Image (cartoon, rainbow, N blue to C red):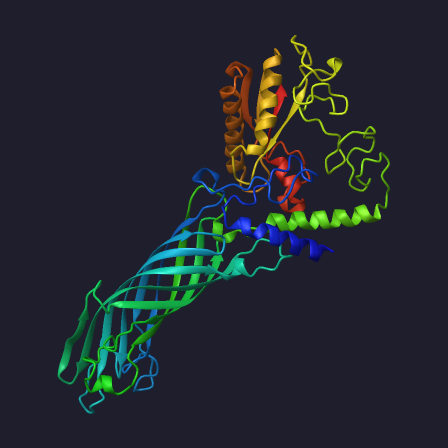
Amino acid sequence: MKLNLTSFALALVLPTAIFAQDSVAVSTEGYPNTFSSGSANVSPFTQESKRFNDWAISVGAGVPLVQSADLTSIKNGNGKNIFGYSAYLSIDKAITHAFGLNLQYDRGETRQGWFNTKTDNATGNTFQDVGARTQYDAISILGDLNFSNLLRRVDNKSPYRWALHGYAGVGTLAYRAYLEDAAGQRLMTEIKPFKLGSMFGQAGAGLKYKVNRKIDIEGRVMYFVTGDDEFDGGGAQYSPINQREEQVSDNFFNATLGLSLKLGKHQSHLMWHDPLQEIYYKLDVLADRNQDVEVCKKGDADNDGVCDDWDRQLDTPAGARVDGAGVALDTDLDGVIDLYDKCVTVPGPVENNGCPTGGTVTDNTRTLEGIEFDLDSDRILPSNTPILNNAVNYINSSSGTYNVIGGTDTRASDAYNQNLSERRANTVKNYLIDNGVEAGKLEAIGRGEKDLKYPECDPATKCPEWKNRANRRVYFEAK
């Protein structure tokens, strides 16, 4: 049953993942909620809605080996390998969780032939006693395919630190090829960039390891196809050396070790986040709960349609609408459930059946429920504006002052969470002021991870995602 539900939901959700980084931002208002769905709040991508970092700078160095040419680096005429050097610098942009583009600059020198021209000299004993080296510069555009995100198992909800990437792209190549024999060393071919015929292609794979949220280490093996029979230093196309083999393209491998610096203020990089991780969890919860509903081992004491196994309010009045946890709905959060509230969308005191009286509210100890936030975000979701608008009405109708209190879950450091909670509290405070609340009635306070709604969620891995989301909140408390 779980497999069928997951497959069906993925078919619905996958197209939305193409839209935006924020495609899994789901308003739960205390998940689980019978009025929530996996596609809630899907919105077009904007810079303001970004939830992940998507830029990086990468550098690396390595060893190129000419493999397909008349003069090679691998098992040359003397049965030895001759190693050159290389380095690269790239600017990386993640487009989706599984695909990105890299603008890359490569520079290096290959060494090939019967001896290393940097350490040895030609003996002149044989016609074949030649060595060569090629200095090259290359600029290319590479497509970056993240196989680890593309092929992750549906039931894998754990974070991961290793990722397999595939790369392929084209660019422009410039090089200077030198040949050395008994007559000495001389420049054989020089190709400058941006000329017709100076294009090349490269493809390969890399294995990345996430050191932390800012730094990755990557080992790569790339294969360069030059499309040029003179790259190895053998001279003109019909020279004696270039007639030894029939191939028309001198190609080489380049093995590198590099470092990536991920740029941005968010906790996660787009390429390191499974886009459906939260949805997988919620589908499992729904599937498990669905099984419980069918069995209903403990019954349904209040007949509200939610089994007692899941019901957080076991004495719901008959006829009251409830959320997915069996709690009677209170749309305006005034303490009067909708069943008895004469003013469902406008808060008012209990003694006036939930309608405003126009007088002073004397309940100074009242704590108003607030709103929840996405991971590592202080952005107010569109689904939360009705709750905040109701808070505006309530605060304006009272004579008291209120603390606007921000909190976080237990991910990240204490200092980071403290700063994030203050940002969340100030965002909500500014929203209320912009919508008519007197600034003197509000004070923004950040409590970081010290004021958890669910204290048992420390660390966050001990709890389901809906509890961690409930800890990422802002609420109001009378002074």
